Length: 327
Image (spheres, rainbow, N blue to C red):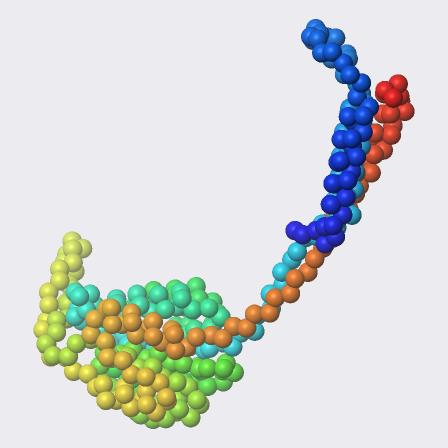
Protein backbone atom coordinates (compact mmCIF):
# COMPACT_ATOMS: atom_id res chain seq x y z
CA UNK A 1 0.00 0.00 0.00
CA UNK A 2 1.24 3.51 -0.81
CA UNK A 3 -0.10 7.10 -0.94
CA UNK A 4 0.40 8.45 -4.46
CA UNK A 5 -0.49 12.09 -3.50
CA UNK A 6 0.77 11.95 0.08
CA UNK A 7 1.25 15.76 0.26
CA UNK A 8 -2.50 16.11 0.89
CA UNK A 9 -1.86 14.69 4.38
CA UNK A 10 0.23 17.79 5.16
CA UNK A 11 -3.00 19.84 5.00
CA UNK A 12 -3.77 18.52 8.46
CA UNK A 13 -1.04 20.66 10.00
CA UNK A 14 -2.68 24.09 9.41
CA UNK A 15 -6.15 22.62 10.11
CA UNK A 16 -4.99 21.22 13.46
CA UNK A 17 -3.36 24.54 14.40
CA UNK A 18 -6.46 26.53 13.37
CA UNK A 19 -8.77 24.19 15.30
CA UNK A 20 -6.60 24.47 18.43
CA UNK A 21 -6.64 28.28 18.14
CA UNK A 22 -10.43 28.29 17.62
CA UNK A 23 -11.02 26.08 20.69
CA UNK A 24 -8.88 28.24 22.93
CA UNK A 25 -10.54 31.45 21.69
CA UNK A 26 -14.11 30.23 22.04
CA UNK A 27 -13.81 28.40 25.36
CA UNK A 28 -15.23 30.66 28.14
CA UNK A 29 -13.42 30.71 31.49
CA UNK A 30 -15.02 28.43 34.03
CA UNK A 31 -14.54 27.40 37.60
CA UNK A 32 -14.55 23.61 37.84
CA UNK A 33 -16.65 22.02 40.54
CA UNK A 34 -17.89 18.45 40.95
CA UNK A 35 -21.32 17.43 39.68
CA UNK A 36 -23.37 14.33 40.26
CA UNK A 37 -23.05 11.68 37.56
CA UNK A 38 -26.52 12.37 36.19
CA UNK A 39 -25.85 16.10 35.86
CA UNK A 40 -22.40 15.50 34.26
CA UNK A 41 -24.00 13.31 31.58
CA UNK A 42 -26.68 15.88 30.91
CA UNK A 43 -24.17 18.74 30.75
CA UNK A 44 -22.15 17.23 27.88
CA UNK A 45 -22.36 19.51 24.86
CA UNK A 46 -23.41 17.72 21.63
CA UNK A 47 -21.11 20.19 19.84
CA UNK A 48 -18.12 18.03 20.80
CA UNK A 49 -19.68 15.01 19.09
CA UNK A 50 -20.55 17.01 15.99
CA UNK A 51 -17.02 18.40 15.82
CA UNK A 52 -15.55 14.90 16.18
CA UNK A 53 -17.75 13.66 13.32
CA UNK A 54 -16.69 16.59 11.14
CA UNK A 55 -12.99 16.07 11.85
CA UNK A 56 -13.24 12.32 11.21
CA UNK A 57 -15.00 13.01 7.92
CA UNK A 58 -12.31 15.52 6.90
CA UNK A 59 -9.60 13.00 7.82
CA UNK A 60 -11.17 10.40 5.57
CA UNK A 61 -11.57 12.89 2.73
CA UNK A 62 -7.90 13.87 2.97
CA UNK A 63 -6.89 10.19 2.97
CA UNK A 64 -8.97 9.75 -0.19
CA UNK A 65 -7.29 12.82 -1.77
CA UNK A 66 -3.89 11.27 -0.93
CA UNK A 67 -4.90 8.37 -3.25
CA UNK A 68 -4.09 5.19 -1.36
CA UNK A 69 -3.01 2.48 -3.80
CA UNK A 70 -2.50 -1.26 -3.40
CA UNK A 71 0.44 -2.71 -5.31
CA UNK A 72 0.45 -6.05 -7.12
CA UNK A 73 3.68 -7.57 -8.41
CA UNK A 74 3.60 -9.53 -11.63
CA UNK A 75 6.66 -11.72 -12.17
CA UNK A 76 7.55 -13.07 -15.57
CA UNK A 77 10.06 -15.91 -15.57
CA UNK A 78 12.05 -17.00 -18.58
CA UNK A 79 13.36 -20.50 -17.87
CA UNK A 80 16.12 -22.18 -19.83
CA UNK A 81 15.16 -25.72 -18.90
CA UNK A 82 17.35 -28.78 -18.61
CA UNK A 83 16.17 -32.30 -19.39
CA UNK A 84 17.80 -34.93 -17.18
CA UNK A 85 17.59 -38.72 -17.43
CA UNK A 86 18.75 -40.53 -14.30
CA UNK A 87 19.95 -44.05 -15.12
CA UNK A 88 20.58 -46.48 -12.25
CA UNK A 89 22.06 -49.96 -12.24
CA UNK A 90 19.80 -52.45 -10.40
CA UNK A 91 21.85 -55.59 -10.94
CA UNK A 92 22.30 -58.00 -8.04
CA UNK A 93 25.71 -56.58 -7.16
CA UNK A 94 24.04 -53.30 -6.11
CA UNK A 95 23.06 -55.18 -2.93
CA UNK A 96 26.72 -55.28 -1.87
CA UNK A 97 27.18 -53.55 1.48
CA UNK A 98 30.47 -51.70 1.21
CA UNK A 99 29.37 -48.09 1.85
CA UNK A 100 29.44 -47.83 5.65
CA UNK A 101 27.46 -51.07 6.04
CA UNK A 102 24.78 -49.83 3.66
CA UNK A 103 24.10 -51.29 0.27
CA UNK A 104 25.08 -49.42 -2.87
CA UNK A 105 21.44 -49.51 -3.95
CA UNK A 106 20.13 -47.83 -0.77
CA UNK A 107 22.78 -45.10 -0.84
CA UNK A 108 22.19 -44.42 -4.55
CA UNK A 109 18.42 -44.12 -4.06
CA UNK A 110 18.73 -41.75 -1.11
CA UNK A 111 21.22 -39.51 -2.93
CA UNK A 112 19.17 -39.41 -6.12
CA UNK A 113 16.07 -38.52 -4.13
CA UNK A 114 17.84 -35.54 -2.55
CA UNK A 115 19.04 -34.43 -5.98
CA UNK A 116 15.53 -34.57 -7.47
CA UNK A 117 14.06 -32.61 -4.55
CA UNK A 118 16.65 -29.88 -5.09
CA UNK A 119 15.84 -29.27 -8.76
CA UNK A 120 13.38 -26.70 -10.13
CA UNK A 121 12.00 -26.07 -13.61
CA UNK A 122 13.87 -29.06 -15.08
CA UNK A 123 12.28 -32.13 -16.57
CA UNK A 124 13.61 -35.28 -14.93
CA UNK A 125 13.19 -38.89 -16.02
CA UNK A 126 14.23 -42.14 -14.33
CA UNK A 127 15.41 -45.38 -15.88
CA UNK A 128 16.75 -48.62 -14.39
CA UNK A 129 18.77 -51.36 -16.03
CA UNK A 130 20.46 -54.65 -15.29
CA UNK A 131 20.35 -57.32 -18.02
CA UNK A 132 17.71 -55.15 -19.75
CA UNK A 133 16.60 -51.50 -19.40
CA UNK A 134 13.22 -50.18 -18.24
CA UNK A 135 11.93 -46.60 -18.17
CA UNK A 136 10.04 -45.93 -14.92
CA UNK A 137 9.40 -42.22 -15.58
CA UNK A 138 9.91 -40.24 -18.82
CA UNK A 139 11.32 -36.69 -18.54
CA UNK A 140 8.65 -34.74 -16.68
CA UNK A 141 8.08 -31.81 -14.34
CA UNK A 142 5.98 -34.08 -12.12
CA UNK A 143 8.67 -34.68 -9.52
CA UNK A 144 6.21 -36.62 -7.38
CA UNK A 145 5.94 -39.22 -10.15
CA UNK A 146 9.72 -39.45 -10.48
CA UNK A 147 10.18 -39.81 -6.72
CA UNK A 148 7.55 -42.56 -6.52
CA UNK A 149 9.27 -44.38 -9.38
CA UNK A 150 12.60 -44.10 -7.60
CA UNK A 151 11.20 -45.38 -4.31
CA UNK A 152 9.45 -48.29 -6.07
CA UNK A 153 12.62 -49.39 -7.87
CA UNK A 154 13.69 -52.90 -6.86
CA UNK A 155 16.57 -55.26 -7.53
CA UNK A 156 15.62 -58.54 -9.15
CA UNK A 157 12.64 -57.38 -11.23
CA UNK A 158 14.69 -57.39 -14.46
CA UNK A 159 16.89 -59.97 -16.11
CA UNK A 160 20.19 -60.13 -14.28
CA UNK A 161 23.42 -58.80 -15.70
CA UNK A 162 24.86 -55.35 -16.43
CA UNK A 163 23.84 -53.95 -19.79
CA UNK A 164 25.35 -50.45 -19.62
CA UNK A 165 25.07 -49.92 -23.37
CA UNK A 166 21.37 -50.84 -23.47
CA UNK A 167 20.55 -48.59 -20.51
CA UNK A 168 22.47 -45.64 -21.96
CA UNK A 169 21.01 -46.03 -25.45
CA UNK A 170 17.44 -46.09 -24.07
CA UNK A 171 18.17 -42.91 -22.08
CA UNK A 172 19.49 -41.26 -25.25
CA UNK A 173 16.32 -42.27 -27.06
CA UNK A 174 14.25 -40.57 -24.33
CA UNK A 175 16.14 -37.30 -24.80
CA UNK A 176 16.93 -37.20 -28.52
CA UNK A 177 13.76 -35.27 -29.47
CA UNK A 178 14.00 -32.87 -26.54
CA UNK A 179 14.17 -29.14 -27.33
CA UNK A 180 15.67 -28.20 -23.96
CA UNK A 181 18.71 -25.95 -23.82
CA UNK A 182 20.72 -28.70 -22.17
CA UNK A 183 20.22 -32.48 -22.10
CA UNK A 184 21.96 -34.58 -19.50
CA UNK A 185 22.22 -38.24 -18.54
CA UNK A 186 23.44 -39.29 -15.09
CA UNK A 187 24.55 -42.93 -15.31
CA UNK A 188 25.28 -44.79 -12.07
CA UNK A 189 26.65 -48.33 -12.14
CA UNK A 190 28.85 -50.63 -10.06
CA UNK A 191 30.04 -53.08 -12.70
CA UNK A 192 31.30 -53.78 -16.16
CA UNK A 193 29.17 -54.27 -19.25
CA UNK A 194 28.58 -58.00 -19.69
CA UNK A 195 25.24 -58.36 -21.49
CA UNK A 196 23.08 -56.40 -23.92
CA UNK A 197 22.68 -55.63 -27.59
CA UNK A 198 24.34 -52.18 -27.69
CA UNK A 199 28.03 -51.61 -27.03
CA UNK A 200 28.53 -48.89 -24.34
CA UNK A 201 31.02 -46.98 -26.53
CA UNK A 202 28.49 -46.98 -29.38
CA UNK A 203 25.82 -45.66 -26.98
CA UNK A 204 28.31 -42.97 -25.94
CA UNK A 205 28.84 -41.97 -29.58
CA UNK A 206 25.08 -41.85 -30.01
CA UNK A 207 24.73 -39.49 -27.04
CA UNK A 208 27.52 -37.28 -28.36
CA UNK A 209 25.85 -37.16 -31.76
CA UNK A 210 22.67 -35.76 -30.21
CA UNK A 211 24.61 -33.30 -28.05
CA UNK A 212 23.68 -35.08 -24.82
CA UNK A 213 26.17 -34.80 -21.98
CA UNK A 214 26.72 -37.95 -19.85
CA UNK A 215 27.93 -37.90 -16.25
CA UNK A 216 29.13 -41.39 -15.33
CA UNK A 217 29.43 -42.58 -11.72
CA UNK A 218 31.24 -45.77 -10.71
CA UNK A 219 29.97 -46.71 -7.24
CA UNK A 220 31.44 -49.27 -4.85
CA UNK A 221 34.81 -50.60 -3.81
CA UNK A 222 36.98 -52.96 -5.77
CA UNK A 223 38.46 -56.07 -4.26
CA UNK A 224 36.91 -58.32 -1.64
CA UNK A 225 33.33 -57.33 -0.76
CA UNK A 226 30.36 -58.93 0.97
CA UNK A 227 26.99 -59.64 -0.59
CA UNK A 228 24.09 -60.29 1.83
CA UNK A 229 22.04 -63.43 1.19
CA UNK A 230 18.63 -63.25 2.86
CA UNK A 231 16.50 -66.34 3.34
CA UNK A 232 13.00 -66.55 4.77
CA UNK A 233 12.20 -69.28 7.28
CA UNK A 234 9.07 -71.36 7.61
CA UNK A 235 7.58 -68.92 10.17
CA UNK A 236 8.32 -65.78 8.16
CA UNK A 237 11.56 -64.92 9.92
CA UNK A 238 14.38 -63.65 7.72
CA UNK A 239 17.98 -64.67 8.27
CA UNK A 240 20.95 -62.93 6.63
CA UNK A 241 24.23 -64.52 5.69
CA UNK A 242 27.08 -63.06 3.67
CA UNK A 243 28.90 -64.27 0.61
CA UNK A 244 32.35 -62.82 -0.03
CA UNK A 245 33.85 -62.42 -3.50
CA UNK A 246 36.14 -60.16 -5.51
CA UNK A 247 34.41 -57.20 -7.14
CA UNK A 248 35.69 -55.65 -10.40
CA UNK A 249 34.77 -52.39 -12.12
CA UNK A 250 35.60 -50.90 -15.50
CA UNK A 251 36.25 -47.21 -14.80
CA UNK A 252 38.07 -46.80 -18.13
CA UNK A 253 34.81 -47.52 -20.01
CA UNK A 254 32.89 -44.93 -18.00
CA UNK A 255 35.68 -42.39 -18.42
CA UNK A 256 35.55 -42.88 -22.19
CA UNK A 257 31.77 -42.37 -22.31
CA UNK A 258 32.06 -39.17 -20.25
CA UNK A 259 34.88 -37.86 -22.43
CA UNK A 260 32.99 -38.61 -25.66
CA UNK A 261 30.00 -36.57 -24.50
CA UNK A 262 31.86 -33.70 -22.77
CA UNK A 263 30.57 -34.95 -19.43
CA UNK A 264 32.51 -36.01 -16.38
CA UNK A 265 33.47 -39.27 -14.68
CA UNK A 266 33.26 -39.81 -10.90
CA UNK A 267 34.65 -42.60 -8.77
CA UNK A 268 32.66 -43.10 -5.55
CA UNK A 269 33.66 -45.35 -2.66
CA UNK A 270 31.58 -43.91 0.20
CA UNK A 271 28.25 -42.20 0.80
CA UNK A 272 29.65 -38.71 1.44
CA UNK A 273 31.55 -38.85 -1.86
CA UNK A 274 28.36 -39.71 -3.74
CA UNK A 275 26.57 -36.78 -2.09
CA UNK A 276 29.43 -34.50 -3.17
CA UNK A 277 29.18 -35.80 -6.74
CA UNK A 278 25.48 -34.98 -7.03
CA UNK A 279 26.06 -31.56 -5.46
CA UNK A 280 28.71 -30.85 -8.08
CA UNK A 281 26.43 -32.00 -10.89
CA UNK A 282 23.70 -29.81 -9.44
CA UNK A 283 26.01 -26.79 -9.69
CA UNK A 284 27.28 -27.68 -13.17
CA UNK A 285 23.75 -28.09 -14.53
CA UNK A 286 21.98 -25.06 -13.10
CA UNK A 287 18.84 -23.72 -14.75
CA UNK A 288 19.00 -20.10 -15.95
CA UNK A 289 15.98 -18.17 -14.70
CA UNK A 290 15.50 -14.58 -15.86
CA UNK A 291 12.95 -12.66 -13.83
CA UNK A 292 11.11 -9.52 -14.96
CA UNK A 293 8.92 -7.82 -12.38
CA UNK A 294 6.13 -5.41 -13.15
CA UNK A 295 4.21 -3.58 -10.43
CA UNK A 296 0.55 -2.75 -10.97
CA UNK A 297 -1.22 -0.27 -8.67
CA UNK A 298 -4.93 -0.28 -7.90
CA UNK A 299 -6.70 2.82 -6.55
CA UNK A 300 -8.22 2.38 -3.10
CA UNK A 301 -9.53 5.92 -2.38
CA UNK A 302 -13.19 4.97 -2.87
CA UNK A 303 -13.85 3.57 0.60
CA UNK A 304 -12.40 6.41 2.70
CA UNK A 305 -14.09 8.98 0.42
CA UNK A 306 -17.48 7.28 0.72
CA UNK A 307 -17.15 6.89 4.48
CA UNK A 308 -16.08 10.54 4.82
CA UNK A 309 -19.13 11.71 2.84
CA UNK A 310 -21.41 9.56 5.02
CA UNK A 311 -19.95 11.06 8.22
CA UNK A 312 -20.39 14.59 6.84
CA UNK A 313 -23.99 13.77 5.96
CA UNK A 314 -24.56 12.33 9.44
CA UNK A 315 -23.08 15.45 11.06
CA UNK A 316 -25.27 17.67 8.86
CA UNK A 317 -28.45 15.77 9.75
CA UNK A 318 -27.72 15.65 13.51
CA UNK A 319 -26.85 19.36 13.60
CA UNK A 320 -30.25 20.24 12.12
CA UNK A 321 -32.46 17.72 13.87
CA UNK A 322 -31.56 16.04 17.18
CA UNK A 323 -28.81 18.51 18.16
CA UNK A 324 -30.06 21.63 16.38
CA UNK A 325 -29.82 23.68 19.60
CA UNK A 326 -26.19 22.78 20.17
CA UNK A 327 -24.88 25.95 18.45
